[in-house]
Image 1 (tube, helix red, strand yellow):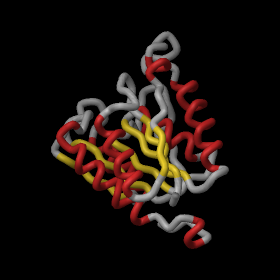
Image 2 (tube, rainbow, N blue to C red):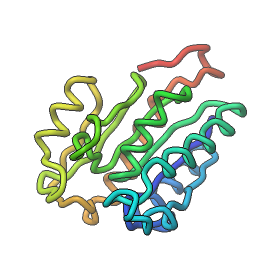
Image 3 (cartoon, helix red, strand yellow):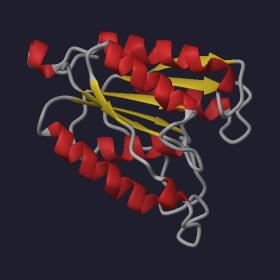
Image 4 (tube, rainbow, N blue to C red):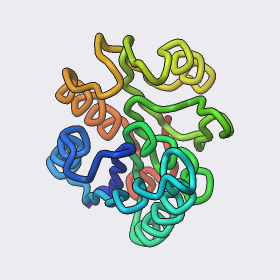
Length: 185
């Protein structure tokens, strides 16, 4: 395997959601192992925060990444809240790349979305009703991240295939440590 992809679903979604399923198919086709953690039990804990138990989401993902990183390069991908926790965890454990779908780069009561300085690609809807496209453009611009803006809303339901293709392009661009000894951007 070239590496391992951990694909995190958004708030009140699930590991069988169409976007993370499409990414799993891309990862497998491109020679990556993959997993889709289930955070649905944590999303129901809205007494912790309105978005469920975000610290427990982060802890669960950190445990998975830590274990996977011992076996080889890791790529994190996430949708919405899954993107936020992926970015957060990427600062704590080495990752080879990041892929974000409708990332909440600014959330009330939270720090701006953190993320490691690794190759990053983003897909976001111009008409996202939760996260203004301008915020994502500014965040992506500050990092020189690849950004695909599409005529869609927060769910990106009309662009599942475009999301899968953008993820494939990110994976194809990565120079894995086993291949080159360094991370490429």
